Length: 466
Image (cartoon, rainbow, N blue to C red):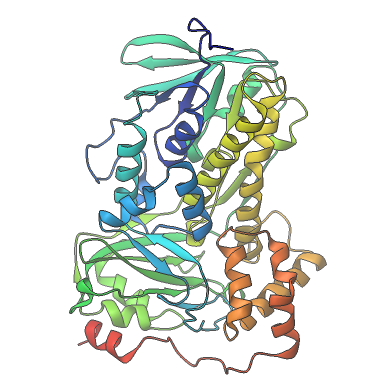
């Protein structure tokens, strides 16, 4: 039967042109004409923008996110790499100390590849690709004011551009506006009950400085260097060196209540030297800083349980950080944003737009990757004093001890490491930790001893430390 040329395509409005919004727009183009509403003016190149202040800190896309990104936008990862990004082998290209102070061996046998670059570069390549699609319109410097419709159905979005206010009619409104989402208030304004929320705040502060990669490291594949904080030794302090494009290092330091880094440039290296291991401080001590220190304190894990709402309007979905924001130390934000959008696209392919109750199903589908990242982040952060509304119970404590044992096993066993990375990279659910690949090495013991220090090669040390 020929397609009716007069039939109207559904209309979707996406709030926010950061990564979550652009992923969502890409996911919807096969089903609707898409308008992206963005509060800021977007930069023309890989430059910072006001709406993403956290972009200056270290970011990466876990392998589960890389798969989702290339499923949504085939070849996008290769485009980022062509612009200077890098696919990093985890753990082969990473020097990392776990929260329980065990150093991971640099096993080369796992398939996991994380995408590493500056957030500015990633957003630029993503914007360039998505907004080139003729099915997507962009309204910049436009504020989303409120939802139009009622408790049963959202029919559009009220917006303001300059002095002009108008309504964008929509069959689907997607809120991808990030941590500052106003969806809870908008939903109550429509007469719906308040959404359940939870916050776990470890009190983490971040300080980041950009460095010129020392020695000849700008021309080689220098590993990521990561010293993770130990919740058992509050205040927890950690840091990461993230080699990025153009021969630069992003160095991000972190500390919980009572041990926070500051924006004092003279204190930055000393803070790094006084972590649980001084390797980051040693590597940057003689490196050339590029600019000042940037700090951030808005790092709480905060989740809104939209998928549990007893009533949910058709025509509205919330995605990405607008559902849940995580302590950035875990690096899961971009991965979850891509997986949320992929879940929406895949469900639309099997169900089709306009199906009654579809929005509730989309919201529940988007909650699955959110829940996986939330459990990983909160499982660690809830252990810090004052982080959670309740102290971990017996079951949570038992699980935490099991995860510690899994980390210890993965540090010495490539088979167990592969299982651990499947979970950390959001490729597989946490039940993977109870598979034979983890349990057999855990019970019968890996043969390799624990490392006594960071596994940098002699060549790597020589190129970075005079």
